[in-house]
Length: 310
View (tube, one colour):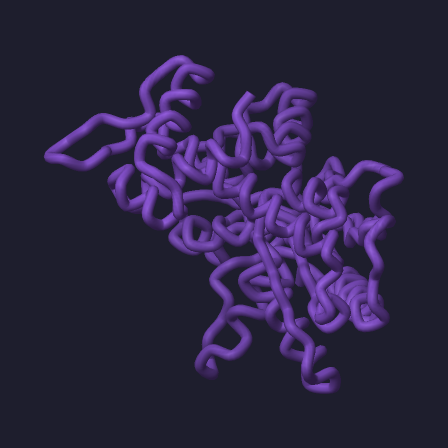
């Protein structure tokens, strides 16, 4: 089984390009590091490096190895800091979140919160929802925002149900509809989430139940990534109320006279996005973390109440 030391050595060799430099950086001998790499290669069954012009060049598979090993090493470092209970932990807020809330929503919330709460250190990492849930379940973070969290003894979650909508360019004839159905949208080019995403699967099921065609030439990571393709008129979007709010917030400070190029219409049958605000059950949570979590809760509730589709 590969050990943390294998990952550390391989990562340093990739970074420096040579075993001798890696040995110097790690304070070990060159033969010792060569044995570590040889041992790792025997375990995984292939060579990790080729020698090119006197330097060690990682094979393509090694780049993937590096990405995952860095992630593991970071988790180990996080775990070590947590177990040592650093003296400043209660003045630092560690947040893991799904990418769509990392670009605007959370930075805005942090800026507003710190106006009245100075001296707090914020650490925010954007990750796919499944990784956010893992980060909270492993007690490494104080707060998490993720899709579809399941009940767990390792974390508590406050879930928000957000309706999904159809987004179309304002001059599209479909914008005249007050409600859109699969029959209205049959054969129209869509931009939406990745095929394995639960919202895409539910959308496909809705079209299949009506016996109509769902055409998805553009499958993207999240709802906010859809805006450009919708504005260009190349596709119709499928997203949640959160993305409606985000689009309007991003555009409200533009020049006077600017009108949003996208309009949003309800979709039937109703499909909902579940977003959870997570807190770990076995990590000591400071009062300031609880206050910020409450602030996020109120903001998400306000988005649900205030975002209309007109």
